[in-house]
Amino acid sequence: MSAQASLLPGNRLHLNHGPIDLVISADSDAHDVRRAYQVAAAMFPNILPELVAKLAILRAPIDDVKPMIMYPIARRMVDAVWPYRNVFVTPMAAVAGAVADHVLDMMVEAAPLRRVIVNNGGDIAIHLADGQSVRAGVIGDLSLPRMDATIEIASTDPVRGIATSGWRGRSQSLGIADSVTVLAQNTAMADAAATMIANDVVVDDPVIGRLPAREVRDNSDLGDLPVTVAVGLLSSQKVAQALENGARRAAELQARGLIAAAYLQLQDQVRVVGAVHQPVPSRAA
Image (cartoon, rainbow, N blue to C red):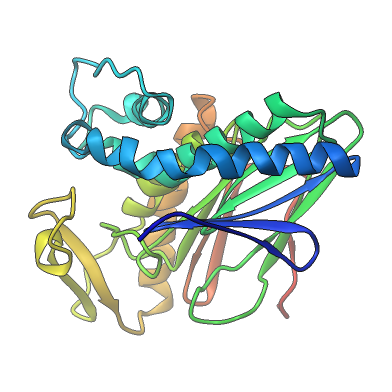
């Protein structure tokens, strides 16, 4: 299937090619927005083929020898997962975020833009000129169409990337979080960190179903690692224990400067680590 580009209502640009699905909105003078969209649409068809050409490296676990890759998106992926090389992780943990970051950077280089949002399936790259801000909604449970919290990011905040991971999402997870949403310096960093934190939202219980990753998805980069395929109703104590495990990991990453904040949700409980204009729950207490 070839790459597709189209305009959506609200002057948003939609780019789709295989598993990559971007919805982009830009705010600036009309001719600058048009120029940025033209650049994004022109470079977009090359992204998937160039990633596929590097798949052997990108699906291999990171170890103590950092892969040297010239292709910028692949390099972003490697850089994002490098801090986690002491555990099993491949650069694919940051692929969606790295793509969003790259497209955003190309647009900002092409034209002076006040605000840009590149949404790659929920992993969101943000550009904010001075004085600009953006409000993002957090959907804690992807099976329920409701917004559980909102986060406002200002141009003065050190956050330009948002990413979400969890067992219900499009990526495989070793943990049981409904979702872990992370704010970080860029989207590739947020993507990798969300994966790591979500993997640590764990607890043992018979209602949790796990299968080797390759049995769930033939081309999985996780091999025989057990990924979560079902989570039944857990006791409040088990939910709290799993979330505390993830929150400890998030606090560690925040202390290391790898994330700014994280919002963790499992069934009816939430944990928040850090804050950028403190998330405000939109659901009833």
